Length: 101
Image (cartoon, rainbow, N blue to C red; front, side, top):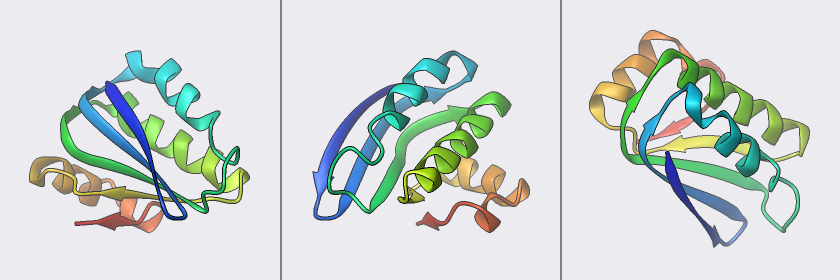
């Protein structure tokens, strides 16, 4: 996964691109290490350019959500592609991680 960070008001926007797989553990840890270091109150992971997430990748979303919560930051997902949104709904991720369409 490639990513860019952007500050937008009180939100850290994480613009992800490509695939999120088990190989992205270090990338997610790097992103999580930034939670709580600035003025952000929210972290928004933009999935609009993510075309694939494997089961470990969905686990990494939960890891990021957990890290954000421990840093006192609300974590949400933004614009998942339809096939990824369907998987998020099947896994009942919306119960834990809010998603903006």
